[in-house]
Length: 267
Length: 228
Image (cartoon, rainbow over all chains, first blue to last red; front, side, top):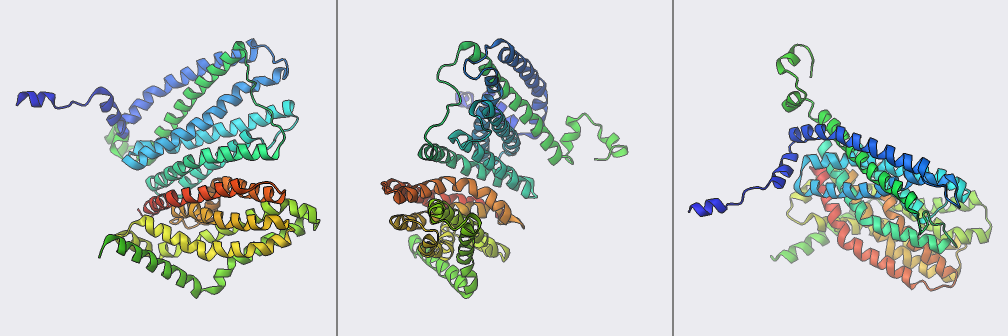
C-alpha cells in the first residue's frame, strides 16, 4: 500500500509554477520582480544594437544612410505579428481554462501590438519616401500590416466597449481568435491581389544582407521582445491594481497596513 | 422523439418564425435594397458619368456597397431577441446554440442578402459593367454574401449586449471581409477582361464552406459571452 502512495504523482516544479502564476497576488509579486530586469535587458540590448546599427554598420550601396530605419522598422513589424499570435494563444487559454491572468495578459498585449504595428507603418512610410519616392504604396506587406492594425483596434475597441472587465476580455479574446484564423487568409489574399494589380513591387530587404548589417538587426529584434515583456507585465500589474483595488491582497502586496489605511488613506 | 428530429424541427420552426417576423414589417425588408440603390447611384454622381471609368470601378463599387448594406442590416440580427429575452430562452431550450445561430444567420441572409443578389444585375447596368462579367458578378454575390452574414454574425454576437454596438460592429468585421472583397472583385475583373474566372468562384465557394462550418460555432460562443 505504501508503494501506491509513494508513486502518487507529485506536481513537478514547472506545473506548480504555472499554477501559482494563475493567482493574482503571486503574479503581481513575480511580475514586479521581473520588470526591472526586462527593462534593463531592453536598455542594454537596444543601446548596443542601435550603436552598431547607426554608427558601425556601413551605409547601404543603394539606399545610403536611409536603410538604418530598418533597425526600428523590421523588429517592429516582426513584433506586430508575433504579439497578435501570442495574444490569440493567450486568449484561447483564457477562454478554455478561464484563467483571469491570461485574460489580462491578452488584453494588455493588444495596445503593445497595436503600437508596434503603428511604429512599423510609420517607420515604413518614412523609409518609403527616400527609397520608393512615396510615403505609401499598396504593397502587399503594407496592406496586411494595415489590416493587422485594424484587427488590433477592433480587439481594443471591443474590450473598452464592455463595462464588465471579465466579459469584455472574453469577448475580445474570442475576436482575437477569429482574427487569427482569418489572418493567413487575409495575408495571402492581399499578397495575391497585389501581384494581380501591380507589375512590380520592391522587396523591403534584399536577399543578401551583410553580417555587419544583420547583427544589429538581430540584437534589436531580441531587445524588442524584452521591451514587450516589460511593457506587458507593467500593463498587467496596473490592470490588476485597477480591477482588484478593493481586495485585501492588494494591501498586502503594496505593504500597506490595513489599520493605517482605514485611518488615513482611503481605498 | 429522436434527437435529430427535434433538431430539424427546431431549425424549421425558428426559420419560419424569423421569416414571418421579417415579412410582417415589409418596409424594413426594403432598407438594405434601397441603401444599395442609393449608395451605388452616388458613385456616378461623385466620380462622373464616363462609361469607361464606371466600368472599371463597377466591381469594387458594387461589392463595397454590398458590404456596407450587409453590415447595416446585421445589427438587427440578434438585437430584438436579446432585448426581449428570447435569446436567453434559446440558450436554456436545450437545442444547440450553434444550430440557432446558423438558423438565424440563414434567415438574415434570405431577408437581407438575397435581395442584394437579385438587384445586382440592375446596378451592374447602371455602372456599365461589361455584359460578359454580369454572370460572374451575380455568382460572386450569391456565393459570398452568405459569407458576409456568417462572419458578421460573430461580430453581432460579440456586440449585441452593447447599447451602441452598431458602430463598433463595422470596425470588427470589415477587416475580416478583406479576402472576400479581393477575391470577388478579382473574379469580376477577370471576367470583364475575358480571362478565366473559375478559380475565383472556386475560392469563394471554399470560403463559403469554411465559414459555414466554422462561423456558427464562433457565433454561439460569442452569444454565450454576451449573455453571461
